[in-house]
Amino acid sequence: MTENARRYMVYGIGNGIVDKQIKITDSELADLRLSKGHMELSDQAEQARILAYLGNRESELHAGGSAANTIVGIAQMGGAVAYTCSLAADDLGQHYAADFATLGIRLTSQLKPQAHTGLCVVLVTPDGERTMKTYLGASVHLSPEDVDEALLAQSHWLYLEGYLLTGDATRAATFHALELARRHGTKVAYSFSDGFVVAGFREDIERIVTTYADLIFANELEAAAYTGQRDPQASLQAIVQDGPQACVTCSENGSYIHYAGVTHYVPAFAAQPVDLTGAGDMYAAGVLYGLARHATPERAATLGACAASYVVSQMGARFTGDLTTTVRDILGSA
Picture 1: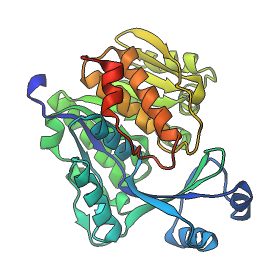
Picture 2: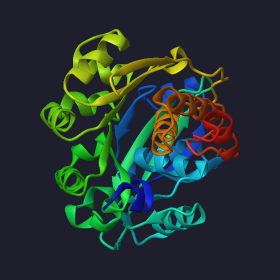
Picture 3: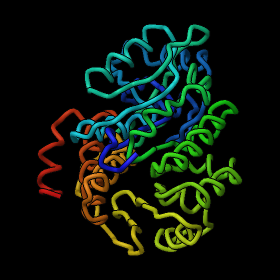
């Protein structure tokens, strides 16, 4: 299929998780004996214990998951996108599907009766740091058969999250999708997702970086876990020596993008952090949208940085304002 004939900017594959965002104090977090700033897998019983402690506190529900947040961001920028995940035939699964339908995202997910839809309890402290307890639920049942080859072939980019390496079925789905991308000439963007993924699945990560990926997304801690380099610029150079192009984000210290043989530094946009959830996901959305629009890499990364500043200034990974004006302001007619 020719590039011009492709219908979608990005086809994402990842976990189907409903995010439940709740504000919490540092002392309450300590009472719950949770590790601040960490994402840890959980079971439903532990989530129930946390929610019982918090009582009927105000919360927000959004269809999420790391790759899903990126796909949502691209849709909000005006891009045509598709997504595959594994959901259950329950209320949360129906909520997820309806949420994506409202956003105009092509969602291909069989509602599976044997599990509950995944839920991530996101606890946000006053400094904006988020502590997450995630029950994967039906997400662990994502398999190679769920990957939609026709949608992948119609997309300019395939976007995958590293979290999928943590399960046997989801790991198999990852490598099946990567092989299909190679077959159909679809470019591959890959997110490291978390330092524990890089450390725990090193062989798989190296195989993806050296064999399949066209663009890697990592924050400075994830990049350090891969390269052993504490300096983000040194990490970036070490990653691209393995083959692909890459972005390394450094929170309020900006980001680096190495693309088409050139490295650019892009400053962060000023923001008062409320909730850091989804900042990296939204950065990836801006970069992929910009590159799909044939913007310069530096301008694409600037769009990502701006969008990330919006999302950290509010509760939740889903930006609630308009992004199309920001796209026009930064990309112009690119």
